[in-house]
Image (tube, rainbow, N blue to C red; front, top):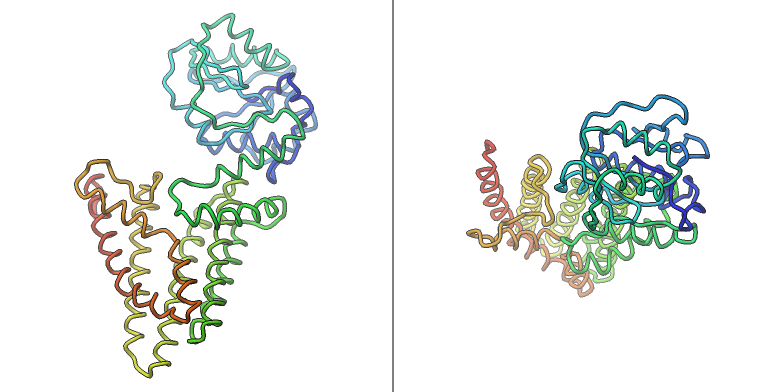
Length: 396
């Protein structure tokens, strides 16, 4: 349940305050829905400016004098309307072990209780004007337990002046530990700066996917030439594609617009660009040496990329095995080094190698490396996929 913000300066933050492209209250409700909350109740005092902020969401605004919704016994999470949560943090509150009829809070605008009488708690929350009074009232009935409530996955917005800091916090949360070094320290810095400006516009994640795809495909023909300037131009467009490709996922996660279609477009769009670049390098090399064997190298590399993409899709999307690293491996398990190696090779830091080689007019060297490396990577993927399917008892 979302209750009014507390008195520590938070009353100066209206529920419609834009935070990374979404009104504050709407962002909180969408994060709760994304975390798997079945019922989301909002105190009427938390949305005094009208209920249009919550249109299309699963939230229910309690009527000041009307009947309260009946809830089944279970877990209730109370959250102040100025606390911006991460969905993963909210989900952890649903999963954390609790003793029944104990009141868990850390005094930072959130509380959790597992109870057999949720209606009484909802009624009490509806009567209280803010979280301080509510927490004091519930603490007098249930035995309070001080705890950290699963970490630091929330930001308490105590004034309109803190919106910039809240957006910085949200953007930092989009960077994943599994990303490559250059992706984290170069591409993400640029893509997050672009996303900050795009998130308040009407540009959708799928539009950004198509923009990224167009930029990548525009760079491929430059690899038909052996001239370093042309190849470098193509490589820089490929790098721009990689940067813009980060924006679509960032927009989707920030605005809770993730979709299966968007994931498929993003995933296969990347691979189409990579295949197009390899094909153009092979064709240009073949024309330069007046021989057909570079086309064979390009065909091997491109086919391996597509087959590897299919294996990754099966392993991480259809089997939902994505958890942290792309290819999880249990510490100490036999052959655990292979999944870790595959995880490293699957990252896109190879683009910087393409840039360096292209600056010297040697993009063909990258194709030669890819013609050897991608089949080996494919074999590693096949071994990992087969092992994962056996471990999960999923028919091949």
